[in-house]
Image (cartoon, rainbow, N blue to C red; front, side, top):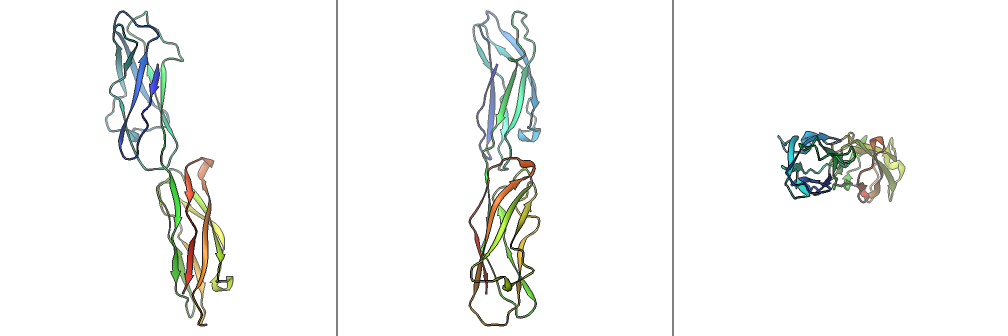
Amino acid sequence: FYAMVIPGTVLFLSFLDFTVTLHKAAAFDVTIPWTFAHGTTTDSDFTGGFTKTGSVVVPAGQLTAKITPSFPVIGDTTVEANETFTVTLGTPDKTSVSLSATEKVGTSTITNDDSAVINIANANQFEPATGTSKITFDVTLTQPVDVDTTVTYTLTNVTTSDADFSNLTKTSTLTFLAGSKTPVTPLSFDIASDAVSEPDETFTVTLSNPTLAGGVTRNVTVGPAATGTIQ
């Protein structure tokens, strides 16, 4: 008994097929009950009302038969782990046909084919004459991830200096909660006041080291550095 998997495609409905194989053709039809069970999948991975139990008939003289209906998998864009489910065969209706424990369970894997990039956009802000002003960078995930994700950011002066900022933290992390495409706390820096007339000043912010909760592995990368301009 083996499973043939048709890989899922993002946002399209795909079907996973299981084929039952006899080691030797019988002279009569063989009916075998089967039962679906979730491994790491959930009902939401399939179209509503899909069949979880049934029976498959291998016709006389044939070696194989496909379980019908196929299992309809719903595509999505969430970056997540591969997911599995099983189909277990029950006792055949003919006593001359038997199954071993290792032959009666078929496992199907829904392979994740999604990836995400953490991007940061350029930003600019006027330098205040008094007090402080805030320069905020838009940091976004291109696709949601199924677990909390953190990324390190690092500020590097180009023509700015540390004195151009107030309460400056040059490197720290941002956190994206599972399913969210924006960080819990926006990425901002306080610009210190300066009454001196001077050209625009720039600095860069670089993202690195995306890390996922629980130490799991997902296809998450970072985009290019952004430039901040103090006008």
